[in-house]
Image 1 (tube, rainbow, N blue to C red):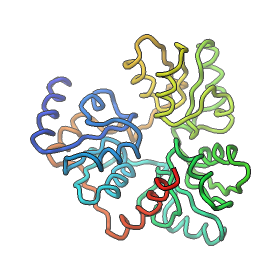
Image 2 (image 1 turned 45 degrees about the horizontal axis):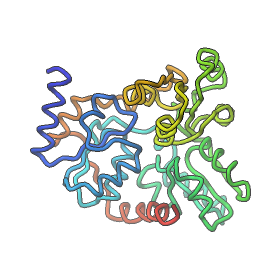
Image 3 (image 1 turned 120 degrees about the horizontal axis):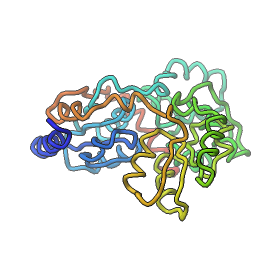
Image 4 (image 1 turned 135 degrees about the vertical axis):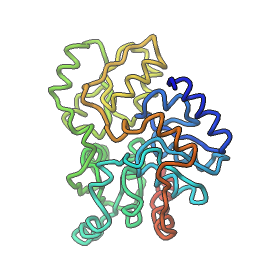
Length: 303
C-alpha cells in the first residue's frame, strides 16, 4: 500500500472499531494527519478523557499512554508501538525517589509529567513544561524536590528564587545533547532567526534563547510572531510541522541531532495494526491509578 492508501484504511478502521487516535507532536507527519488529536502529552490525555470512543490508541511513548489510562481508567488504552519508551521517565523509579525523600524531609516532591505512573504515586504534585512555574509557585511548600529533569528544574528554580530546590541528575537525552556550540552554528547560519528552545535544554543553551517554552508554547509563539525565521530548539519534527502549517515562514532545527528515537519508532503500520486491536494494552493496578491520579489532580487544582 502507499502511505495515502494506508492512511485511508486507518481512517476507515478507526471509525468501524470506535477508536480515537492520539498523536504527540513529535510523531511523523503522516501519523499526525490521521490522528483525532495532536499535541503534548497531558493535553492528549485530557482530550482522550473527553472523547466518546471507548478505545484510545496512543502514538507516543509509554508514560503518555499510562497518563491516558490514569485519566480514563474505564477505556481501553493501546500504545501503538510497545518499544516506545521514554529514557527520562525510566531514569528514576519509586524506590529511588522514596529513598531521596527520606534524605530530604519537608520537601514537596514535584514530578514532571514525563515520569512513570508508579513514581507519580509518591509525588505531591505533577507538572507539564508549560505549567511548571505556575504550579510550583502556587504550592504552599517552600522546599521542592523536583524530578526527574534537572534542566527543567533549573529553569523553574530561576523563576522562583524565593523557594529552595533539590534537583537530581536526570533529564531528556535528546534536549540535553544540544550545546552552546550548536547554538552558535545555527545563529551564524541564520542570523535573522529567533531562537526558540525547550526548557529541557541545558541552562547555558536556554540562556541564549529569544523564547523559552513547551512544545505547544514554541508552536504558539511561532504562529503569533511577526518574525519570519525561527531556529527551533526542540525535537526536529516540530520544525517540519511548523513548515507545513506556516509555509510563509522559515523554520530551522537547532541541530540535526534533535531526534527522539523513541518517538520515531512508531510507524503508520503500527497505527494500522493498533486500530485493529494489536499493540500494547496499558494495564495499571487500581491502587496505582488512584494514587497517581492524586498528583495530577493537584496540578489541575493549582494551575
